[in-house]
Image (tube, rainbow, N blue to C red; front, top):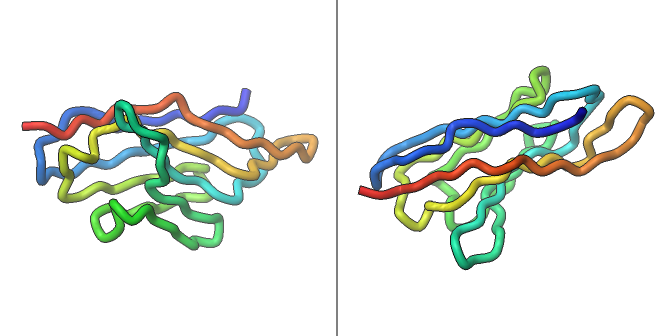
Length: 121
């Protein structure tokens, strides 16, 4: 079974830092783009950051300069380093993988189950 498994959410004080991880498992041959989206209560899901297999990154405007996305292609793992966290960063963070090539040359799009980040004193 091909899936994304996230880890690293939790409760953080304002101004704190945290790292999220997401690993894709299964019979995966390649993944073009991996990234993170988030959804706060009562709001639409929004882009946090994405990174291609070549290292090209894209950030949402609200997190640019505070968050850093990175990736280990050999491990099919993407990381999100979050700094200077604010209460508005509170949300469920979802890992996403686009154009996942699996055995049989099938292309998949995957979402993780989500991990909750709460920023509060």
